[in-house]
Image 1 (cartoon, rainbow, N blue to C red):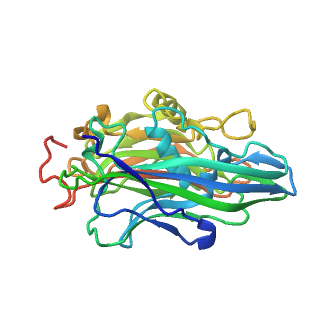
Image 2: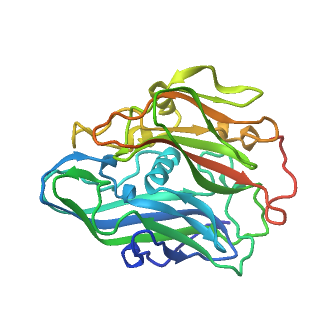
Image 3: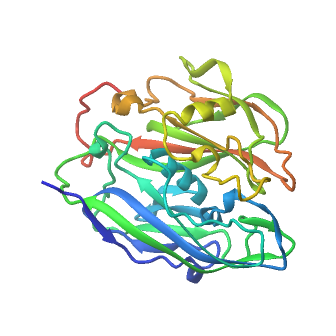
Length: 351
């Protein structure tokens, strides 16, 4: 019997919440949530220009500081908008359609829109519904949230002598779910971000992937005060104390990203950037998605009790991209949690 249902939730209007304040849409409680779909729309008005450079591929999601799910006051998902878009590209069967981004330097109003998803049932899994989101207390409030980094003027979309002003910001939200709560998942997914500043040239610099949960995957991104850049990470390794995942020899970062395109269909490589829009926009490797759930099997995920001190080790440097005054490597942690009473009591595999 077909069980999945889709319901629209309240439209989030972040402009009414104000920059630095979350706008919310309350979720349907007491169900197994498979994914959350979000479509952001806004008008970007360029004035006093023209602009000279696109930033963050002109993506409206770059203007979102936080997007996620808050359960009874606790964040279960919290990532920046452009990283959620990269995650969406990672699990998509192909390039996500119908995105409208800044693609012109000329003054004027542009109607922008773009979709991203929060995947709980893992599209790359052998049986996706082995993981889904369940609330600990169905009587408590569970909400999708969006927080903009600015609701008036933004430098996240373009560099210009004038201004880029956002207006009419809305986020339409859909919850995809089924009500078969008696079927318990093996894990409940959560997503969070860690960030490490890079202030100088580094060799084998450790970025610790500390977690007490199982780890399904990560997305490694290069970020700066001027948005996405391509020149922070030169080489990368992933290690634990007992074994190497990428290693023992570190691998060129762009080569890793190029190789990942054979596994993932979406254009995460450079945030889906169209090179015809602006030659100055980064066109090389920006994000590296890494899926530990190989062949779709949950038995392949990383167990922090079987190895210790999981970490990235990077060779690289602070960005030299024009205008960049701060550099960081940021990592989306795709964690899987076992919750007594909500998840299946026993795992039918060794993880």
